[in-house]
Each structure stands twice: as structure tokens, then as C-alpha cells.
Length: 451
Image (cartoon, rainbow, N blue to C red; front, side, top):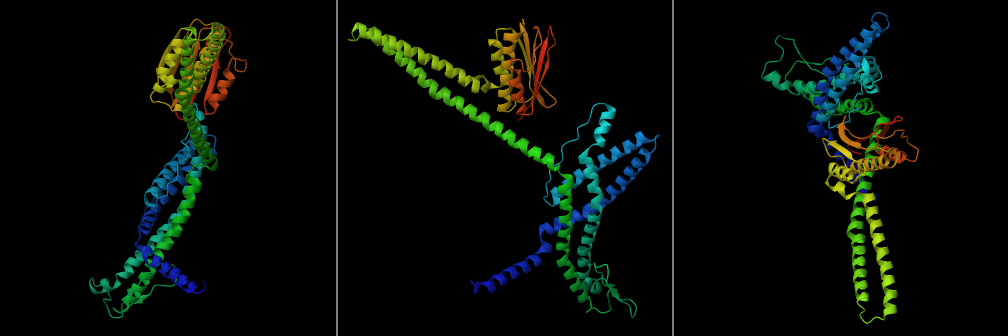
């Protein structure tokens, strides 16, 4: 074990040296350098524009006459910051491979003052403002990091410039300045061609340091982007929980669908076969087949009872399977609702306009909501007719069931509406009831297209 230690150390040192020598020529170094080069003017212009807008906004808001105009300048500032944040996320994704999810889209309020208030309360916009303010110093360091690359290129070509392009002292006693990226230490001057190789050494050192300095600057900017330009921690957590909830809902819907198929293709088939076998046995007993009459009567009675139990079990099993997942949904929600409307004891007018097919879980919830609401219409409303309308509105699936009954429907009165409210809430759905005394009753169920 001790004998291997020196070789291990040598391997680590050798690997580190090779990595340091290769660093200036890697794609990562070039991408980070390009990011620093493109990021500085964007940060500078954005910072200046943002400071002007926010200064004007703050100054005018402090006065009574220009308060509204000042607020508009502040809103423009947050909007500009959001736009700059989008550019920085795109630049980071393209050059650094740093893909940060955008924050939630801005949700405007209702009315002019509602929209203005929502803009001023836009947390993502103000976090973008903080990024624009904090990114300028980092971008300045990025410009300085690019200076290391530039000075390396200039110094490495010093002999060529001296010999070919005549960049050497023109008058006796003149000298060639050597560019250095350091802000201190003075500027060395060369007076001979041999001295240009000192510049080459300085250039080589700058070339080796440049990628690591650039990487440190980019690491600072990465942290700013992740903390200020992505979703808020709580919003990211909510999004993660929503995705997990959607997977759980879809998995449960698929599991119930498989269970319904197993019941349909397995247990139901066996019960049908059992009922047919009992029918044949009854026929054999009825024909006599060597069985005494008294014994045949007892057997027929037992077979009749067994056949009745098998038939009832089959009916219950079919109802159970239909309650788990209606087979009509296999062809989509419109066909399933058409079947439901056709079976209703109250005439139902159906209108379906859905731009895209929802997920299986959403279709199932919408179907059972429609079925329960139509059941309530038949049992409690005394209505002569009903309407079922399903449409896509604002990116959501909206189901409305209307009847001309006596009204007065309220959740929690044993009408099944409480269970529907709980069902739709599992997928961030809503249920609204408008049922004045005397009717009509309108129940609207809003569901996302995807759980």
C-alpha cells in the first residue's frame, strides 16, 4: 500500500499538469470566454437603462403630480429587467450549457390599476432587477478575464511582430512595451529581438492562467443566475410537487384502467362461463337423465339459486368495473358523454368543443362529474331538461351542467357535490355552483387538460 503512494501522487500531479496545459484549448474555455465577452456590453447597457428608469420612477413617484408616471417608469424597469434576464438565461444556455428554468409567467390583474399593482408586486421582475445590478461587477471581471486572453495573444506574437511587421525600436534607445494583464508592477520594455522571448514567456503564463480566471468569474455568474433568474425556491418546490402529483394521478388512472380490463377479461368471463354451465346443468336435470324426481327438484332448486347468485355477482362486477373506468371513455370524452346523455332519464342537450384530448385521469374525472351532476338533476331538481357543455377555455377544460329545475343546490346537503369538490381538487380543479331558488341551476367544473 505504501509502495503505491508515490506512483499515485505522481499520477495525480501529472494529470493536473496535463489538465492545466490543455485548459486554454478546450471548448469549455472558449465558450466561457465568449460568454464573458458578450456579457459585458449587455450588462453595461442594461444597467445604465435600468438605473435611468428606476431613478426617474422613484423621483416622480415621490411627487404627487408625477406619481402615476413614476409608477409606470418602475413597471418599465421591471419589464426591462425581465427581458434582460431572458437574454442572460439564453446566453448561459447556449454558451455555458447552464439551463435554468424561467420563473412563472407574469399574471396580470383585472383592470388598469390591477395590472399596475400586479406589475409592481412581480417578485420575478424585482429579482431580475437585483441580477442586473449585481451582474455588472461580475461582467466587469469577465471583461478583465478576456484581457488575459488578449494580452497572451499579443505577447506570444512579439517575435513575429518584431521581425516581420517592424514593430521594433525605430530610433536608437527606443524600446517595445510588453503588455501585461496585471494592474500593477509597471510595463516592461524590450530593446532587442532576444528580449521578445521574455514577452513570449509572459504570454504563455497569461494563456495558462486565463481559462482558470475566466472559469472563476463564470462560476460567480452561474450562482447569480441560479439564485435570481430561476423560479423562486417555493415556486420550484410547488412545481416539483405538481409534477409528482401529476405522475401519481396518471399512474393511478392507468392502474385503475388495468384493473377494469382484468375484471372485464378475467372475472367477468369466468362468471359468464359459470352461468352458462349452470344453465346446461339445469337443462340436464330438467330432462331427467336418470335422476329421481325428488332429487331432481332439489338439484333444480340449488342450480336456480346458484345461477341467480352468479348472475347477480356478474351484474355487480360489471357495475364495479364501470365505476372504476367506464369503457365508453376508451373512444374519448365526447363519445362517453354522448352515451351518458343517451341513457339519462331527463332529456340532455350535449355540446362538446375540446381543442385537445385531456389526459386519461382528467377525462375520467370529467366523466364522473358529469354522471354525478346528471344523477342529481334526475333525483333532486325536478327538471324537465338539462344541458351538458364541455369546452376549452383559457387553457382549461370547463364542464357546465345546466338544468331548469327548482334550484337551491348547495354542496354539503347530501347531493354528492361535496365529493365532486374533493375529486376535482386533487388536480387543482374548481367547482362553482349557481343555483338560486326557483332555478335554473348551473354547475361549472374547471379542470386542467393535464393533471
